[in-house]
Every structure is written in structure tokens, then in C-alpha cells.
Length: 343
Image (cartoon, rainbow, N blue to C red; front, side):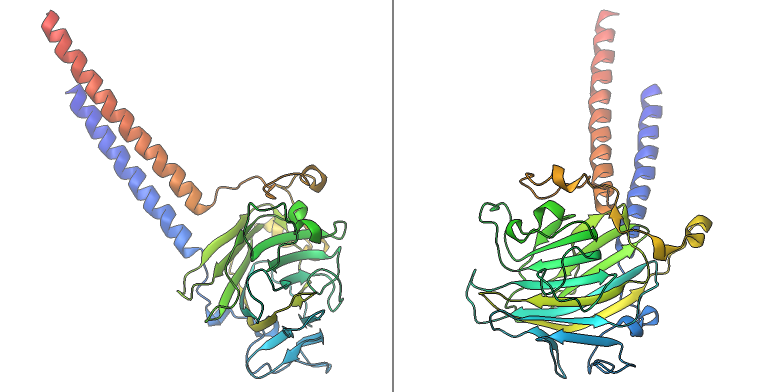
């Protein structure tokens, strides 16, 4: 009877755990926006045929440098040496929670390892300031997502290029081109974004202090997680933009669209009363950059538990419990049989 009751308790626990795991999985799947047009913010979106792009007072997007606007794409740089170009939203964004979808294409005549330099997607305090960081200024305020196509650090062979990384800056940190930004990156992933026969996509989500970057480079309409980090603080009132640069090596860097979606998220009363325009860009999970210059992985953040990580952790715990229960039942039965022999 005791053994039967134990087995019933185990079954009940397993059923409850299974329901919880399914619920967690559903939360993970539902956490990705479906690009609902109802939440599309057109004043922050760049789409064909690119109306509202130009230098007039009513324009919502402005561009500089080598940028060429056509009816099919916005080419930030041509496949020529020493070019810089950018395009910037003229309307500051006051959304607390948002997701930006970028459709882009990087292509050129250069063969493997003979192309550069890459694209950057920005959410920053200042706009239209050309500089050395993929065509934009260094020591910026805000967020940058780098799509780096050329390896500068010949010692950093633990990662393949093109490489996507993220950086949050409060104006005090310089981007280290020689180390491919390792000392200041929040995380990253390799992605074959160059010379694809189809367009490639990037999703940048900022919600409740969490930054998530996902990519779709296989044309399968499926997002693949690249970066996921909590403790990120970004103010409102900054500008979205994109820039690109070429050096001795070159590529065509094309933006096809940038679509911003508002995420409907509830905030606490304290968060609602906070002046979000006064927040300083920061990441609470980072160590000091100077402590991480020699980190061979280039990844110096505490690893947060994402939905999938929680799911895998619970699954491993569940399997461990099942194994322990089976072993315990076998040991208990052996002891019972041995006791019968003695009595």
C-alpha cells in the first residue's frame, strides 16, 4: 500500500510538472511578436516606396554620406572602397517597449574574407554624426547592434564572421575595432548574412529591461535567438537609424525596410511615474569593461535564464526526479525481498 501511494504521488507530480512545462513553452512561443500591423508605428518605420525620406522639414527619415535611396532599397554604401552612409529617423521614439524588424541585404563582388565592413542598427541620443564606428560616431549614447562582416582581430579565431553583437554605451566607452568590439559587447552570434539569394532579417526587441536580438537568414520565416540579456536600461526620446562603412574592402549594404512595433506591456505605477527620458543607458549585469579586455570569449555578462533555458532546466530536473524515483523503487523492492528471506 505504501509503495502504491508513493507511485500515485509520483504520477501526480509528473502530471503537474508536465502541465507547467507545456505552459512555459507556450509563454516562450508567444513571446515573439507576429508583426501585427495594428501595432506598427509608421512614424518610426522605413518602407517602400520610401515616402517621407529626404531633407525637407516634414521628412520622417534623413540620410547622409554615400546613401542612395531607390524605389527598391536604401543603399548605405556601394561596393566601393572608403564609403560611409547612414539613414536616420527624424522623430524621437517615446515607446517604453518596442520591437524593430530590419530587412536587409549585404552583397558584393568580394570573395571570402575580402569584403567589409558591415552595418550597424542604432537607437541613440544623437543622429547624423558620421564617424569611425560603421559610419557613425564613437562614444555614443544608447544602443548599437553591429553586423560585422570583417575580422580585424586575427587572434580571435573562436568565432566566425559575419558576426552580430550588441553594445550599450553611456558616452564613456570607445568601440575597439582592433578587437572587433569584444571588450564592450553584451553577447553575439555568427550568422551567414552575406551574398544570400534571399533577403535577411534582424529583430531587436526591448521590453521590461530585456534586450533580445533574433535573426532569420535562412528564408524559413523562423527567428533564431542571437542575444538575450536582462538588466538593460534605455531611455525614451532617442532616434533609430542605420549606418554602414567600407574601408580597403567593400560591399553593398542595403536596407529594404525598418519596421517598428509597439509592444503592449503593463508597467508598475512606479515605472509609469518614472521620467524615462532621464534614464542613463546601462546594463546592470555587466562587469567593468576593463575587467574583460582579456576575456577570450568576448562574452562577459551574467547569463540570464531565458524561457528555453528554464524549460531545459526543468526538463533535466524532471528526468532526474524520474530516475531517482525508479532507482528508489527498485532499492525498496530489493529490501522488501531481503527482509522476507530473513523473516
